[in-house]
Image 1: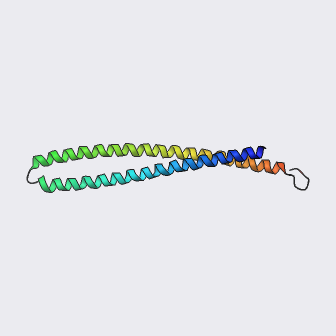
Image 2 (image 1 turned 90 degrees about the vertical axis):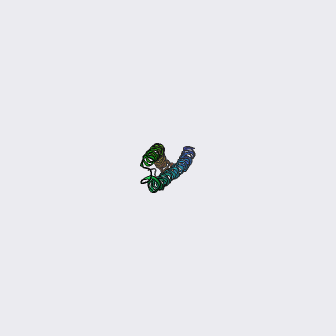
Image 3 (image 1 turned 90 degrees about the horizontal axis):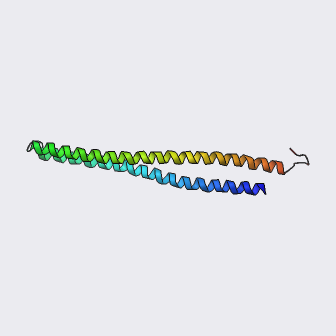
Length: 129
């Protein structure tokens, strides 16, 4: 009976690990998307800065200054939002990895307990060990 309870416990840990691994995969994909979004925003910012430079730098310096300042402020806001999102994702990833390590430790302990119980339940050659 004890062995079947240990098997159930091990199955529960296996299920929890699978769920956490799924969440971890989703979080890692979100981190990849955040990095991609960051690169896309930087490329868009660079293109817009180039356009402003070529269209206004020599012909209308005041407009050039205003447009570049506005574009820089918008870009900094987007970067701050992305950085905040990336930090949240990193914290979530670390939390999930910690949970996964904890469950793996529990699982290892229960596996050793199962092996010990199996060994104690059977005597080889009539001699209990």
